[in-house]
Image 1 (tube, rainbow, N blue to C red):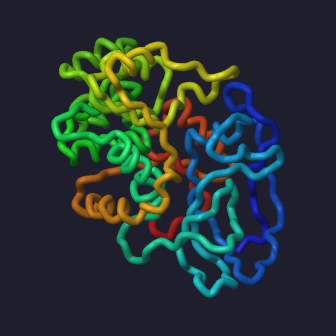
Image 2 (image 1 turned 60 degrees about the horizontal axis):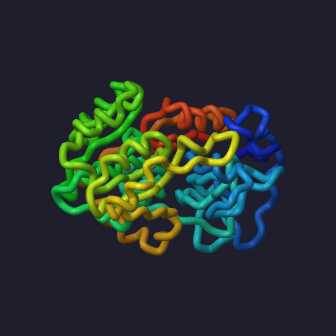
Length: 338
């Protein structure tokens, strides 16, 4: 076992796109365990659009990462040493929340043994990503059988799962993604009824053709012009589940609001933002149902894995440049389940 930890620390707050000198990778000795603590060798690091929000000093749902602090981000790994009677070496856990190769924790979420599923499933479809899709669609969007659900960033970690849940619930599902390959993938692998390629530049007209009966539920991940196009086609009493607005996160100045917000009034639509921690206490019920769907082959997922903590910023850039497909992860060490 290594005696050194590697961590990404925030040097300064990015202005616009994240720069290579906004964070730094540092090494430091791993301290000795205290009573009640566990040492976790992290295997995967989750990188997500919200990492960019956490770097900014703006109103948000958590305190911004402080200058000089270790960057925040979810990890899963294996217990290497324990002074906590609830954990033993070899246990797989989720619970570290920093960009680092080792974590010392007072405890963590222990993963079930012998599921036959890879660790990546618990960082995607059965982890916070899947929970975001489940509660954001079913509790916030409230889709009804036969309705049309539109999902932006449909090839992404959350969007691809949202569309599949909507299909399970009997909806017509239309995705929005970048490029013909991604759009075909969304239809072929995830079973969407149609997918609009925003890179063609005809989003509104292509959406209109794909949604002849209008849009009842918008699962919004992107914001900006794409959200305006969706708002244009909202039906009476539509619901907008506002999960993210990734198109605005790297703005050098303040975020801009939607131009078509008037349709919220005209269509008497409901817009509700949500953060997945709002539903933390209900994760077990969702994981039970989602796990059943996974076992039945009704839910599929993609992971996009970059190797090495030194490449964490490159992995984050893949999300903002649309290069990733599915859940973006960084492999920090060997995965015994792979």
